[in-house]
Structures are given as C-alpha cells and as structure tokens.
Image 1 (tube, rainbow, N blue to C red):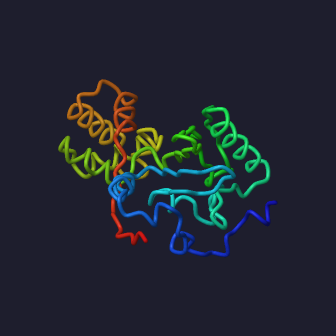
Image 2: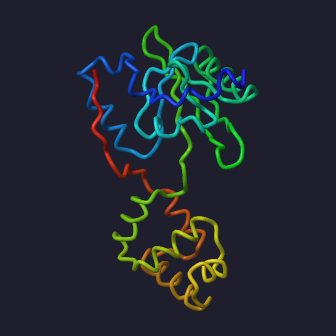
Length: 219
C-alpha cells in the first residue's frame, strides 16, 4: 500500500486533470473565488475521486504531502492514514458525519476536516486542509499596515506567532531584551490588545489571503 500510494511519478497532476469542474464554464466565478483564499479546499466523490481542488489545495497535495492525488484519487501515503481517510470519507458521504483527522508525521503533518456535502441524489465530501502556518505572509503584511507597525514591530509579531519568547526573539534579532519588550508594548498599544495571548489570538483570526493569483485554463 505504502509504495503503491506513494509518489505520483512527480507528474503535475492538475495540468493533466480534466474533471467535470474543468469542463464547465458557467461556474468559473466560484472557482476563482476559492482560488483567491489561502486555505486548501477539495471536493471528493464516492471512492475518494477528486472532483475539485482549489489552488492552495493543489499546492499542498504534492508528492511529499501525507495526502496526495494519484490517478485522480485522493489518497494517503501511509497505510494507517489511508484507512482513517477512507473511513472519514465513508462516514461523511453515507452517514453525514463530520470528522477532523490528523495525517502524516513531523513537518509534513496535515490536519483536515471531512464534511458531508449532499446535492440532490449526489453525495460528496468536502475536505478543508489545515492552515500551513498561523498567519500567512500577506495577511501579516496587511495587518501590519492596517495598524501602522514598523518593520521591526512586524518582525517581533511574526516571531511571537511562531511561539518564540521575548528572550528568544532578542537573540534572533541580536538586540537587547528591553528593546523587544518595548516593541511588544508598542504593538499592543497600536492593536489595542491587553496581552501577548490576546495579540496572537487576534492574528490567528485573520482571514486567509492568497498572495499570488495564477491564471488557470479551464477546459
């Protein structure tokens, strides 16, 4: 199973994929809308067949990911993960149950929600892939501009969102701990937050934004 479900021969599977959503022109607006957000979304039919994946999902489901697309099927590269994925899809499509599962290990670990999607007689499952990081580069930049943060303050905020402590941030940036504390106090004042926890929570709630929109040919 592991070898069979592993790499997809390094093919750009989306460039050769011609599923139903690539053959319809009337629904291009919602596909463009989903491509504009930095959150992976896939629509899967019975048997794990991929019906649609937005741009972020296509980037996340690469050959190194714990979940991949092989011959048009959404599969997990690990045998145990594949069993859990199949069961979650079956529960969503046949029993209208929702699941949140975590697949893979280490740096390649991926969390995804499996949600039932019923349209008339057709039953699908919606896969929502976990965020790649707490806050993407573009939302962080927009947040910094909105609150008039300096470049140094933005760097400190990014480090806080990565889970670093003020002492670690000072070491990373090569400045005194007092400088970092002053910058944190300034960021909190500009964002009207009372603590680092509240500040990080505020950033975590930022809506996802896609940095670059690429032209996609739908057939």
